[in-house]
Length: 109
Image 1 (tube, helix red, strand yellow):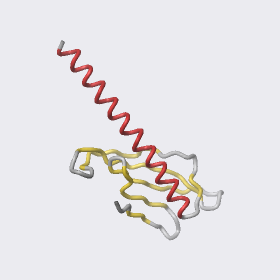
Image 2: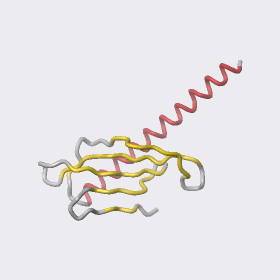
Image 3: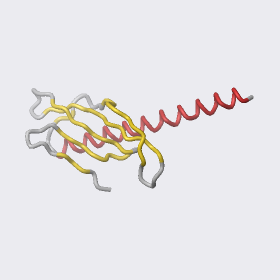
Image 4: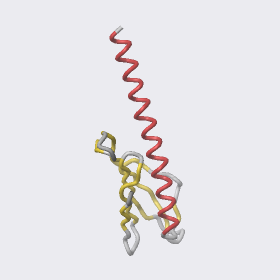
């Protein structure tokens, strides 16, 4: 009985983590698309790659995750540059685009 309960609880926690990760990744892609449009650059591959994850306090003081996602973009179609978006929970917290003028965007809630 205890083993079954533990197994169900573990599966439930894994499912919640998976769902949270998918939601954060989807919102990171949306934030990258907006930033690339704002700076008139091309978002390449339409995807982000998880680079790092750490536990953190999210808005409201609850425990969540801070995730760092890398992505690539192009300024003229011939180059590949890197960018970084930091997600706190499901919200973008910080973004950096490797442009000559090096904009760093602080996301204000």
